[in-house]
Amino acid sequence: MSDSPQPGGQDYERRLNESAAAVAEFEHTPRGFLGTVQHVLHANPTFVPVIVLVASIAVFGVIAGERFFSPFNLTLIMQQVSIIGILAAAQTLIILTAGIDLSVAAIMVLMSVISGKLAVTLGVPAPIALAVSFAGGIAAGYLNGWLVTKVKLPPFIATLGTWNVFFALNLWLSGAQSIRGSDIDEVAPLLKFFGNSFEIGSARLTFGTLLMVVIFVVLWYILNKTAWGRHVYMIGDDKEAAEMAGIRTDRTLRQVYMLAGFICALAAWASIGRVGSISPQSFYEGNLESITAVVIGGISLFGGRGSIMGALFGALIVGVFQSGLRLAGVDVLWQVFAIGWLIIIAVAIDQWIRKVSA
Picture (cartoon, rainbow, N blue to C red):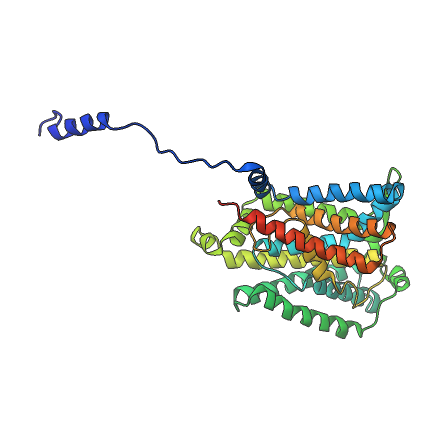
């Protein structure tokens, strides 16, 4: 066999050298101001709730004056949104996977009833009662995840059903009776730990508020700095593509629901300190309020987009609106009216941002 270049190869090289060297070019259409804003918000979904929060603080600061900016009022807002904020953290995990959980508040109340019955009524040591409630929250989350992944029920239907199941269990275990704060103080004061407060300068915060912030920081790290967190986003964005990439989507979904259940159990512990007692009918609207915080926080109901911190900002926006309108003398009816419009506007903005092409 000859090592000399073949004529065909020389001809190929000659034609290659004579070919055009220009690269493909695509027509660039100017975005304009609104298009640029749309792309920025698409890349940074947390910008919207941050802007709304800052604007609402400025507006109500002008309307209500110094009363709104007093340390007492600002810390009161943090305390008032702490429980809904923790529930919103759990709800965010589910919504990021393109699901929804209508049972988060029912799980929370059920776990508070369980810990209260064990510690106060049956005399079980408070740490053991709390551990049982944490296990119960994880089990409740697993049930939701099992219904979604194994029975293949839509998350809305599955959690709508378990919401009624958990609420019925609340009434059955408690006998529709509350556990008084004085009884908790006497037998199991640990259950009210997150109602205790500490001072930072002239501001007074509860440990429940601190718990809310810690939960959001930890979840932010998990979702943004771990492979598991990236899997959660991928499942919400395109479950079939995630499966093709080798992600065990059903197992991850069950883990998401179990983690959400555990967070609901933490919310149960914090709620006892916030309210000062245990009632089977407390936080009845917590499911919808948690969804409200998530939606206002710029997290897409279609899954796969948004930051966990958006839910925290969303909860704070609701708290700021309620506090500002109350200080301005607005009736509670119109406070609910304003929150309703906030939800509508937040979803409309989300739809507009989603129109950005990939």
